[in-house]
Amino acid sequence: MRPDRLSAVREAMVSAGASGITVVTVTGHGSQGGVTQKWRGHDYTVSLLPKIHVFCVVAEDDVTEVVESVVAAARTGDLGDGKIFVTAVDDAVRIRTGESGRDAIG
Image 1 (cartoon, rainbow, N blue to C red):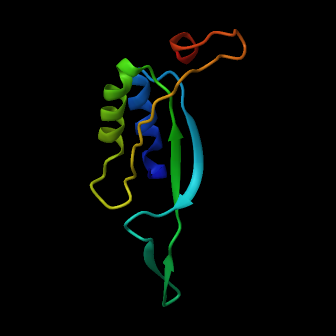
Image 2: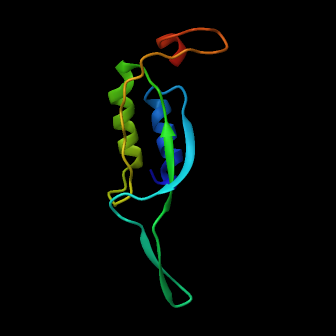
């Protein structure tokens, strides 16, 4: 997703029940293929744009609400808004306490 949307997305995720997120700064492009800009009178194309990759694990009951809140907070309506991939997590273990499953997520 777009880096400038991170603050709004983070607030929306916490409000929707996400207890923690991991954010990674990445570069890439999707269907927009990059952007063309002018610098000192010359056109140049930036094909790999700065993006933010957000990882979050939530309980199955919270998935729909968290996804909807991220979409609402991240959407600008322009190419490059990003995508959300929802995958199942078989298990989770909190290393500090040894808790597993839903107890380890929250």
